[in-house]
Length: 324
Image 1 (cartoon, one colour):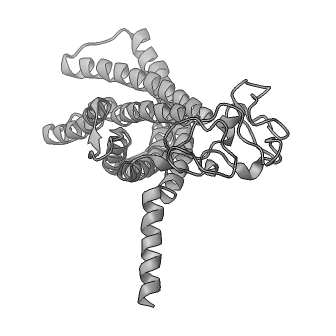
Image 2: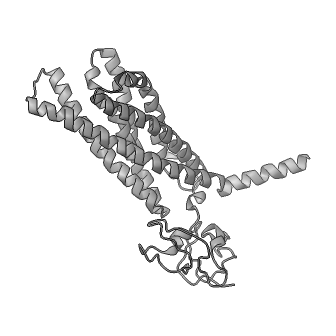
Image 3: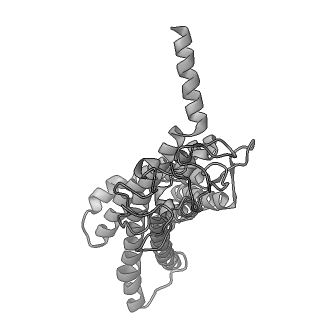
């Protein structure tokens, strides 16, 4: 049996595992080494990768490489691709909040893709009737997306503390819930449908802030592809939301102050800024939904493999055995 002769930190306590046997436990917290790296793909003697294993950054096949080496394609340590899901050692309540929030954002994201796509094609005079049927779903998409984004931006608590909303979470709540209140104000005031761009910009702006937190977590657990997906989503949603907001300001000025824009500028707003903004938001949502699917899977795995969950499951099994 070979001992670990390269830099490797325990997934639970972050102490060095240098000199520890592959099949033993961390000398500091008694966590098995197999909970830090996937030992099933390693040769017990040479510590080389004996199965197909793709690099988490560039998807290069790491088979036959030494566990302490680096990916020849992108240069990240092989151990990052060998590591198991470190989120399993996070606070169990926080994991449940994050998991349910990511699921809510995923559902709202899919609905938003449909609505934004129909909004985009309706500019061309196609599908306006279908869009009218889906508009009734917008408040529900807002509520689901807002609840999900609020949970995803919760800060991970220290031991013994409760989950709480941080500064990013407060910004997300204002960004997402603000347009909901605006919708009610529009309905009460009546005849203000021209302000719809402000309403549409709330969800992507809230998602953008939530993805900032997801990217931070993805970088922490060395999920480079997930971090890249969220970065793409953040950029496109930010640009698209800005474009829609600029278009909304122009519409508001025209209706509120009876301003008439030059024909060339009005054409640019209607046929360049608005379609480009909607297209950017659409791409951002698509990239975001793909990232949320991966993130939801990681969180689900972490919840069902966390020490608290496994301990509770063992207690229930022991109780059932005693009853029998």
